[in-house]
Length: 86
Image (cartoon, rainbow, N blue to C red; front, side, top):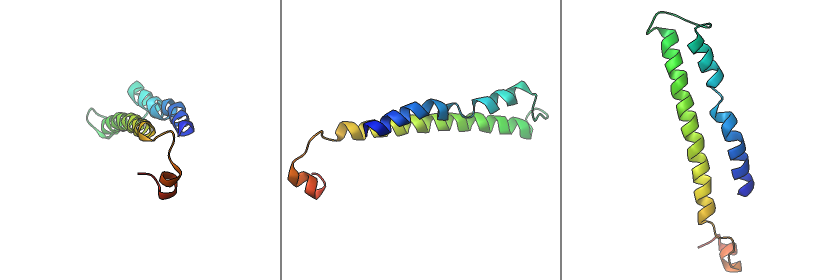
């Protein structure tokens, strides 16, 4: 579980920033543009919302793994191991 947490935390920064570059390009207006409120604006807003969702999902995933780790005993009896825990 420690290895999973390390990997998630290491990759979280990359994943959370995955949409930063396209959002900056859209904001620069050097790529797809259109009238205010048009398809380009809606696409840009959708990208921003997806980035927010992606960041929130990564944080929830890490928190869930940390929670399971906290609740998992470091040791168990032979009986608990054979029946899958208590």
